[in-house]
Every structure is written in C-alpha cells, then in structure tokens.
Image 1 (cartoon, chains in turn green, blue):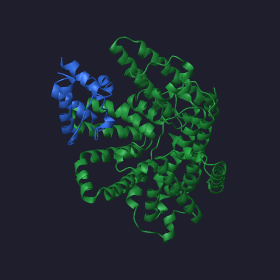
Image 2: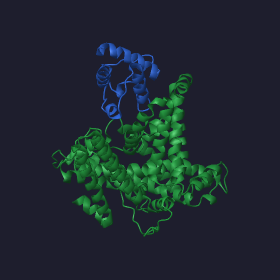
Image 3: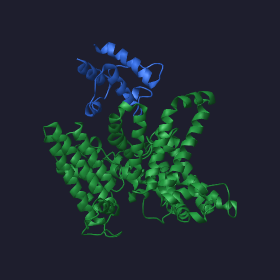
Image 4: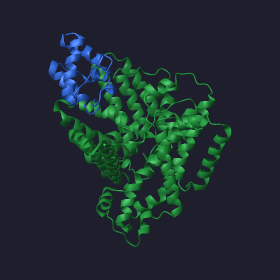
Length: 447
Length: 80
C-alpha cells in the first residue's frame, strides 16, 4: 500500500501502468507454469515477453513508435498524434519491466515456481525502495525474502540508516558538487577549450558513479530498514583491470540481467560459430544495453564500444598474459586499471552527450590546448568545491577499499558511544555545510 | 562410460579450451572454482563437449547445468 501511494503520488497514471504490467506478468507466469505442451509454453512465453517489450517501447519512446508505425503502414492515418508532452514516461518502467521479464523467463526455464500470492508479487514488482532506478531484482532474491517473517530489528534499522547516510554523502557532497559544472560543459561544448573537454571526460565517470551508487546505497539502506536485502549494484568499479571486469562491478543488476537473459541465450544459439559467436553475442548484448538507456545512436555507440573492447580483450588474452609476465604484476595491473578507466571515460562521452554529433565534436576537440589560463582545468568549479569534491572522492575510495575487507558500518557500531557520535556529528556537519543542494534528481531517474 | 573416466576426459578438454596447464574437476566443481571458466568461455566448452561426444544440448538443458556433476550426468544420459 505504501509503495502504491509512493508511485501514485508522482502521477496516478504511473501507478496504473505499474499495476497493469504487474497483474499481467502475474497471470502470464501462472499460465506458463500450468501449460503442459512444450510448444504452447514457448508460444506463451515469447508472446508475454514480446508484449512487455512492446508496452515498454511505446511508453518509453512514443514518438519513435509513431514514426515506425507510419513507415510500416504509410497509408494508415493514425487517429492520434504524439506530441512531446502528451505521453508521460512512467517512472521506473524500464526497471520493473526487466524484473517482469526476469520472472517470466525463470518460470519458463523451470528455475522458479510461479508466485501464488498476488500481494507478495505486487510488492516484488513495486517495492518503493527500488522502484525508481533499481536495483533490478530477481525472483530468487526479493520474492523469496517476502516469504520470511519480518520483525523489527534494531541492528538492521540502524545499519540501513547509516548506509543511507553514506549514499547521501556520495550524492550530495561529491556528485552534486560536480554536476552543475559538468552539465555546464556538456551544455556549451563549443565554448570549452580542449583541456576543459579532457577534464570533463575524466571527471564524468566519478560524478555518475557517486550519483548512481549514492542512490543505490540509499535504496539498499532504506530496504534494510524494512528487513530486506536488495541486490548490490556496484563493487568498486574503478579498480577493474579490464572492461569485462568493469561490467561485473558496474550497474551489476543490469549487466547481470543482460548477461543471463540476452547474452547467454545468444551465445547458445551461435555456439557453432566458435569465438565469433561470442563476439557477435557480446556486440548485440552491449548494443541492447546501450539502447536500454535511450533510443539515440549515441547510446547504441556507447554499448557498441563496450562490446568491441571486451571482444578485443578476449581475443588478446594470451598476449596480455605474456605482457603481464614481462612488465611485472604490479605495474601491469596499475596500467590496466588506468587504461580501463580511460576507455570507460571516453565511452561515457556517448552516454552523456545530448546527441551523436555532440559526442563526435567532443572527441575530436579534446586536446591539451587552453583558451585563457590554466585555471580552466577546474571547469569552472570554485577552489572550495574542488577541495571538497577531491577530499570526498579520496574518502569514498578509501572507505570502499576497507569496506571490501571488513564491514566499516559494523566496525563503527562496535566503538564506544562517544567515538560513534563524534563520527556521526562530523559527517552530518560535513553533509550540511559542504553538500551541493542545488539539484533534486538522480541521473538514472531518466531511464 | 563412468563418471570418473568422464571427469578425466573433461579435464583434458577444459585444459584445451581454456588454454590452462592444469584443470582439476570433481562432480561438485562449479565455474567459480575454475580459473578462466566464465560467461565468455562457457559456450565454447559446451560446444567442444557437444562435438566430442556428438550430442546436443537444448538451451533449457544448459541452464540446468549448475556444476560439473550435472554436466557428467547429462553427457552420460545423452550418450546412451
């Protein structure tokens, strides 16, 4: 009920769309499971998934769908016209549609039984802590947790609150202190110097990570307060030594989703082609992942680049193993981390630019030239903002490094009361005095 | 064909496909236990197994293969 209120509060049509899709998925799941003939099961599965994708496409890209219909049926005069503002893009639809496809696919594969309790299923689909931007949950994760009895757990509540606070720090003190300046650069590419474009390219992955992982921490923390463990979305992506590894650490609930439901079926179909089948599947999968973010060529290129790099890494694995032996493990790993970050930063130009043309302009105008002075390096950020963002970035990386070895939140909880409250007050003071409270959205809300 | 001999044959095949000097398999081994056995090489292994034993796995059968023991059972069943 709280989740329905949360969704309906934005716009009642968002709630109605989510409810219709959820009910549809619930009954399709039951239908697939209760059908006996293999052919009929296959037909039901592919029809239901196609229907979900078509509904998602219509609501996600109404103008594109109208143009497709007009091209395919040029003689039919559609009784409606889609203007930019006539169709509202339902918040969270990309995330809960993927959850619905996951649910139906697991039933089709025989990995999951259909859910019998419609209220539990609705909560699986609409749970408000992950509704807007994920994580994209699997039935084996969240749906199974709904069956467990939940009681008030003080430790889980305080853990959740602390995780939410860490997410807020990432979002407000790091991402939001950088966002206005990076947005400014992307909004006036033609006025920026070559060096400013280089800095924008290098800094954008940090802003995006702080924004999205900050959101995810808030979602995970909020869910923990209610006794649920949501799927983590990030695992220190900037220590990745290859792009393949980066995608096992970045937006994990989406990348594992496309791996399991797009890439693996594709590799199965093309396994007779050997390594070419893997390369083909990688390209199709990552282009799909790119297009999930938006219909523009820039998003397709963003995905295509990831596919090409991972294919290259796969084909040259032996060469890289020999290179690592020659250079020594530490130097090779260090260089690999820098290379992976730079390639990801370059590919994100296509993700962030307003259009494909803007992205090409960006790439072709990056240089070490400056327009006026070296102060341009700060892309307009004040010295205060640079220091705050820089220190927060270092603290975040150090926190994540140690947190991977030992749960820092639990460690702090074991300290005596005075130490704990000093830490809480210092962090709260830092949040309110240094936070950038000038944005009211998250990057991934648009998807 | 018994599981023990099959495991030895599979070890040889895994070494060739994954280009690793030594691969040790038991019925409980999963992809997490073998270096290089990941989503990029999984279908290369399945394809090599299909060729070696002239069998064919359906996709839904592949999804069910969680550990090497499942793979052995499936090969034995299909080779009969």
